[in-house]
Image (cartoon, rainbow, N blue to C red; front, top):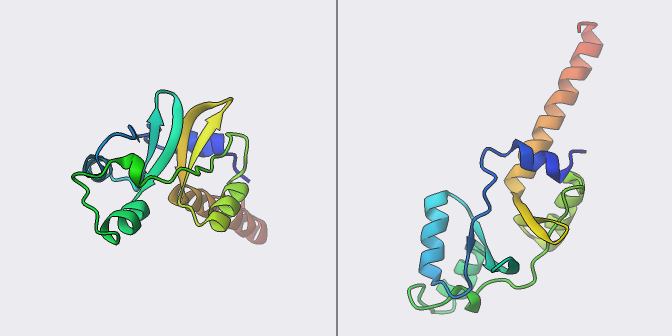
Length: 145
């Protein structure tokens, strides 16, 4: 199994996009659209205060009759943020994501935010691993190297 650290290294863009809890939801949505991402970490200084996702918008703004142009991120963000360490495996991450019905996991090393992985990152890694195993088996079966 691949480690989270290795998955982070393989990402073309390792930037973790963040937003302040006092920012407007509209600004969070605009940033997410501009960056082509589905979640923002909500930070106060170096501290993770929460996470704001497309799911938060759909369930806590649109369905609750709120308006994104006047609602602050802190009012609708998810505060119970699950995170992983760089030494954890892709399998462990998939288990956490499946159990918690999550699509994004911040990566924290010694209390410091070092990255973010998504379900897409994990799927890409698993497909890559399976492709490698298939190629190895094909070489074994055909006797080629």
